[in-house]
Image (cartoon, rainbow, N blue to C red; front, side):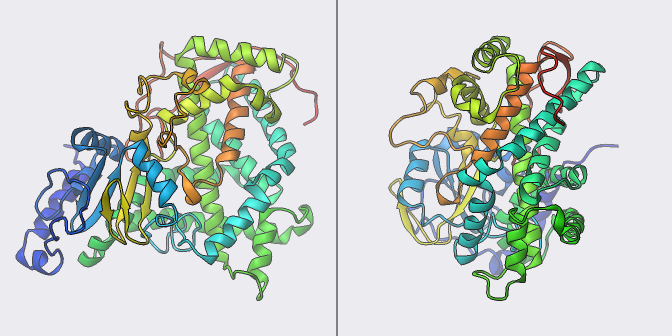
Amino acid sequence: MASVDFGNCFILTLLCLLSTFFLFLFFFKKPKKNAFNLPPSPPSLPIIGHVHHLFSSSIHKSFKKISSKYGPFLHLRIFNVPIVLVSSASVAYEIFKDHDMSVSSHGAIGLDECLVFGSYGFINAPYGDYWKFMKKLITTTMLGPQALERSRDVRAVEMERFYRDLLDKAMKKQSVEIGGEALRLVNSILGKMSMGRSFQEEKVSEFSVKFADLTKKLFLQQILRKPLEKLGISPFKKEIMKVSHGFEELLERIIVDYEENVDEHQGTEIMDTLLAAYLDENAECKITRMHIKALLAELFFGAGDTSSNTIQWAMAEIINNPKILERLREDIDSVVGRTRLVQETDLPKLPYLQAVIKESLRLHPPGSLIPRECLKGCKIGGFYIPKGTSLVINGYAVMRDADSWTDPDEFKPERFLGQEEKREKVLNFLPFGAGRRGCLGSNLAYLAVGTSIGVMVQCFDWDIEGEKVNMNEASGRIFLALDHPLKCTPLPRILNLLPTSL
C-alpha cells in the first residue's frame, strides 16, 4: 500500500477548500501590501501564503533554509495572519534588550482545554497577575537558587540511584536506552522536589513522551488557530485531547493520593503551596485544581523531556568524539578523584564539562523555535512590527549562524572556553529562550544534565553498535530528539564508588 504524506494531503485539502470565491472573499481578504513597513517577504503561494513551510518534516530547518536564501529577518504570511521570522543574533538581542516587555506574550493558545500549553497552563499564560504569582511561587519553592540549594540532597540521592541502576545493568551486560534512563531520572527528581516522595514516574514519563511527539501539531494548532477557527475545523484536536485527558486523569490520581497521605511529606513542597492557594478563598491569586494539574503536566513534560533529550544528545556527541571523552575524564578524575561520584558542587570546577553541555545545547536546543507576540507596535531592525503580530525566533538557526559562530555545524566545546560566545550586541546562545519569559528551569537543567553526564563519563565506558551514533533528528517535533534512541551497553570503569547508604 502506498504511503500518504499527511502534510501534503492537508495542504491539498486546504487548497481545494480555499480556492472557491466564497472562502476567498469572506474568510481571507487580500492583505494590505506592507502597510506597516514590515520586513521583506519571500515568494508565497496564492491564498495560503507560506503555510507550506509549516508542514516540512522539520519546521526549524525549513525556516533556516528560507532565511539563508532571503534574509535573517522576514515577514511570512500564513493565510492572512502575519508572522515575523527572526534568524539573526543581532535582531534577537534587540528584541529582548529593547522590547522584552512588548514581546512578553507567548501568543495565542492553540487549544484552550489542553493540559499542556492550554489556558490553564503557566507557560502560555498572559503576562499578568496569574503569571507573576505562579512565577514567584515556582521560583521560591522549587526552581530558584535558594530552593535548589535546599533540595540538593534530594537530587544527590536520585543520582546515586541512577548510578546503581546503570551499574546493575552493566554487571549483567545489559544494554540501556540513554534517553529512557535519563527521563526516569529527571522525572524522579521532579517528583521528589515537587511532592517530597515517589509517585508513578513510569506512567508520567509515558505521557511526557506522548506530548513530546505532538509538539509539532501543538505548534501548528497555535499558529493556525485563527484561520482554522474561521473554517470551523481542528484537525489535531482529537489526537491532542486524547493524550491530554489521559494525563489529566493520571495527575488527578497522584494529587488525590498526595492529599490522602499528608503525613508523609513535610509541608515545604510546591504541591503544599499550590493546594493551600487552591483551598484559600482569600489567596493572592485564586487557582483551580486544573491550574495545579496543568502546572505539573508542563513541569514533567517541559523539564523532563527537554532535559532527558539534552542528556541523550550530549552523550551521543561525546561517544562520537573519543578525544572529548578522554579530556572530560581527565578533568573529572583530577577534580573529583575516583572514590566518589561527581556532585553538583563540583560543576563550577569542571569548565570543560560545562562547555560540552553548552555546545550540545547550541547544536541541539531543547526548543528550536521561540514564539512570541507583540503586545504593542514597535520598531525592530528598522521595520515597524504592528500590535498582535506573531514573532518566531528560530533559535536553531541563530545558534548555527556562520556570522556568529566559527564552523557552526561542528561540535567544538572549546568555543565556550574562549570569547566566541561573548560578542557585543548579539544574542547567539538561547537554548532556553530569553527575557522575562525565558525558561525558569534552566538552572535545574544545567545541574541535572551536568551531574548525570559527569557520572556516566566518570564511571562507565560505552559500547555501541557500529562505529558512530546516528545523529539524525526525529521528525514531527519542535523539541529536538534523536531519530533513533541512543542504545549503549555500559561497561564498569570504576566499581564501589558509593557507600551502602541506599
